Amino acid sequence: MLQLGQVPTLVVSSREGAREVMKNHDTMFATRPLSTTMRVLSYGGQDIVFAPYGEYWRQLRKIAVSELFTARRVLSGAEECRHTLYTMLDGIVEEHLERMDGGGGHAEDLLDVLLKIQKEGGLKFPIHMDAVKAIILDVFSAGSETTTTTIEWAISELINNPVAMQKATTEVRQAFHASGTVAEHALSELPYLRLVIRETLRLHPPLPLLFRECQEPCQVQGYDVQRGTQVLVNAWSLGRDERYWPDAPEEFRPERFEEEAAKADFGGGDFAFLPFGAGRRMCPGMAFGLAGVELPLASMLFHFDWKPPGPGSAELDMTETFGLTARRTDQLPLRPVLRVPILGV
Image (cartoon, rainbow, N blue to C red; front, top):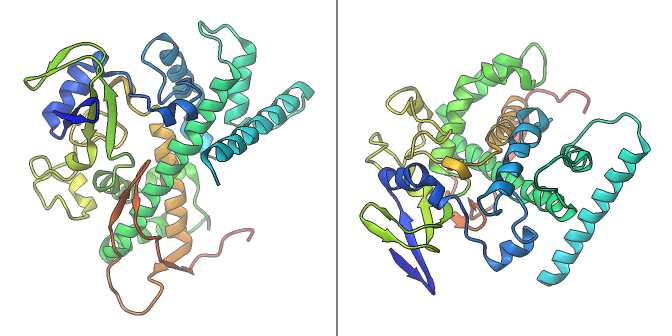
């Protein structure tokens, strides 16, 4: 237990502790702490990520899982920045509303789906326009940031591990040689690439710390946890702990998921492997996020060889910087060499 300023904080860095928080006492820890910054960005907690646990949040999650975050949809001052962003969102929303009112055929995007659900009504808790914009911000921030970060780390690890890079590149090019382009429906034919993504998520979970807040007094591994206590589940540490990953846990080795860790489940069933969290507040966009990594990563490996910018074979610096996500400290300094022409370009 720690005291971060005035906030009592429980840091969980063991599989057993994570299981207690995210399974045994899941309901008691199903709310996330809402900072002042996040309160502003989420329109007062009206989004999926920070909405308090309850009926409204369950309604949003149901919409997200069934309508929004599905794999098929893959196809100088703070005040000034916030005003600009919100103005942009207002314009996008108005444009979609005008298009819907005018009729005519067009491909539905995520915002169209949200506006249609709002317009149809019939919900226990009506979705106001601020909630629509808050959900879109979830996708812009949480969705886009975590996806691009994972792709960056995957390419970085492959560059530092030439054997794995060769295996992944060969697999992708053999699978799509005839078509000349990467097709989403055939991604299931890339088992090694999926191992690469799993191993990347183990070493570099997009959100290294998973935030929860205690709603009722309880005990976690002998600690008395009071209402209002902030809980940090250390997903980064769990993914590198030799108690759960005994075979060189700091090394990038995708094959481990074919061997001793083959049963590791990033769907929230293995509490030593939590790239998408677990329990009621598990990421509702897991399928969406995985597809958003698989397709561009496969395309990058299919069309290009990736080389360091200068001569020599020095390893990339893998230092991380903590922020919304755990990104690379340095930009990824690579040189793409075209190997398979891109159709239509």
